[in-house]
Image 1 (cartoon, rainbow over the protein chains, first blue to last red):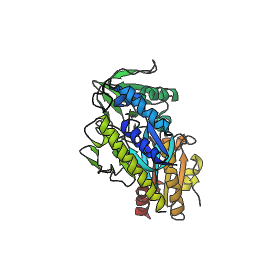
Image 2: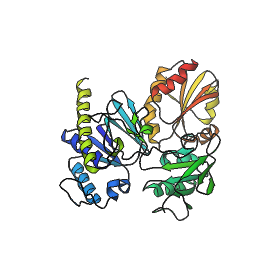
Image 3: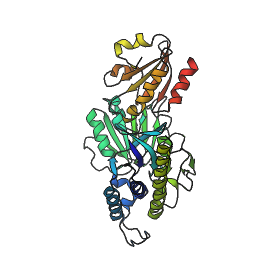
Image 4: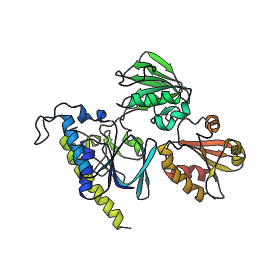
Length: 285
Length: 104
């Protein structure tokens, strides 16, 4: 059990982690592949105060070193669900589960736009977790829609389980097994009556029973049912508190501008308020 | 009574009478682990009123196939052995109690 679980390892999440560690709270940061962090992909940051001409990768490295130095625990993976259970939140991360007293969402830009047919077929052939559901598709045709840097590895895993995998992505995958066919398409549509029957990718139709849509992070509204949004972003107040007690948010997932300084500042507030929240629930027991 | 682990052989007889709620899960599934305490809690709460069981899809692939379980966790509700509702994915406890209470 951790005091605070931070979802996302970009500037907002790491800033929240640093603040919470300074307050002596145990902190777990869960983040996906580095290559999916926008900061990692930004060659030059012009406006981060005191660091003119910083490179994104260098800043990220410094942020991470700072959080590590203060004793932050880190785990690589994708958070699939968060569920409040009394004073505790349960988080599922791939095949594992963790618990925390408070949550900071720092998931980055929200992937709210679902593909046509995606929501209707969720649990009826559409899955967000290869580790969880892969075994149920052994010997069957599945499509991996790869949106995250580690998607090719997930596709390889499904292939190794015995699924007949086709990989669909808008750019050529890095590290995909050569025996997995790759279809280049920016947009897909999932079709079927009651269950998935095919995936349409551009002009190609791929018959399949399962579609694994692997984005860098699960949309916050899917992570935490009932979380209030505003204009497509997570609704927060001045304390970076969301509509769910004990859940805070910071960075790009709360809205514009999508800037490092703003993320770091919001992360500070969220980390601090989350630490206070943990003190409050501990004292009221 | 604690939770009942259902096998392919025992399944039909176990759910043949009254209201049952069956959680399809596996050990390699994080969300299933998360749901597990909820299911255990409900097993205690509905003791004598409904059967609360679990099916390990790894051990019982035939049951998973028969019910067309395509994503886990999936919770299936049955009355006298016939499915009348299902919930796919992790939900808060109220989502399950609402279904059970509607038939009890």
